[in-house]
Image (cartoon, rainbow, N blue to C red; front, side, top):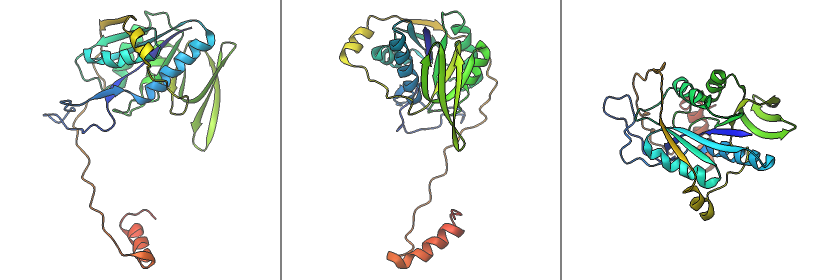
Length: 250
């Protein structure tokens, strides 16, 4: 089975976010980047499927600047066979435009399964998997928390409101992977050395005009300073009153 894993380069989780001049983008000066956390589950699942079948290939692909080679090398070090960087200097924030560019590239590749992370930790819009499946004409299961493959059929479990849903599908398919699906491996020294000999191809990303416009960005208002309403058990009535009338939490 030939598997494509869509990954994204995102700011590290403790990055200090600043708004760029113009108020419509992020100032990336001095920001460090990492592989999107949810995409680690997608990559690990692809490697597990390949190991289970003892056949096929795992290709990782991303859209981004040339610096995104670092995250692709990380994926190669973990066990992916090939990496592809669709280069652009644009800040790609539109899930539909991203899906269009990725779908057009995937259609040129041997691919029976596409794995994505549930969402990107920078934009948090959770739009790519369904958008991608629609453009490819593939089956789609999102937010997969448990997955099994037997006799060519995927059985996936996904959390829904108050329950866990079990669904099945055959390939070709797009699956988005949620936290808890597996325990992602890290690249060891052997994998890092092997990654240097694996192919990392580059091609210009062909991005359509975005259908989403960012009008403005603003940081959240500073959190109000805390206050002490009293000490010990005697403070409980005042605390309850504050939670009820001020915080509206009760």
